Amino acid sequence: MLDASEESSHLRAGHGYIEGGGWRAMASLLISDARVPIEAGETIQSAAVRAGQNPDAFIFMIGGRPVPMDTVPPEDAEVRAVRVASGG
Image 1 (cartoon, rainbow, N blue to C red):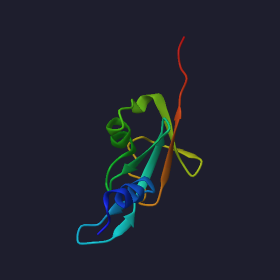
Image 2 (image 1 turned 135 degrees about the vertical axis):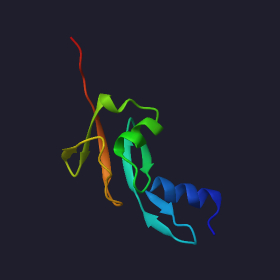
Image 3 (image 1 turned 120 degrees about the vertical axis):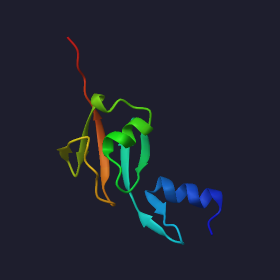
Image 4 (image 1 turned 90 degrees about the vertical axis):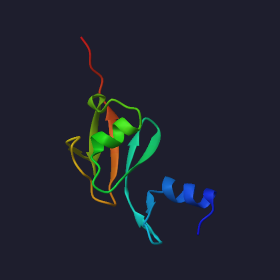
């Protein structure tokens, strides 16, 4: 069993606890200077909202390619959010 600081370190590194023991890689969203874990089956849009951000204000990229916000990323993906400047 990990203590609280070790658990926090694993979560920041993009690992999630598997019930029954052990850690697994999980996708993460890099948005507004924060790393947000993306749960298995969760969309990028949902993770952005959970982080307190408006997903419409960003373009989401995996491996340098834009992806729709309703994408469920692979477990090991690092999703980068690029803020879009708009106005008139």
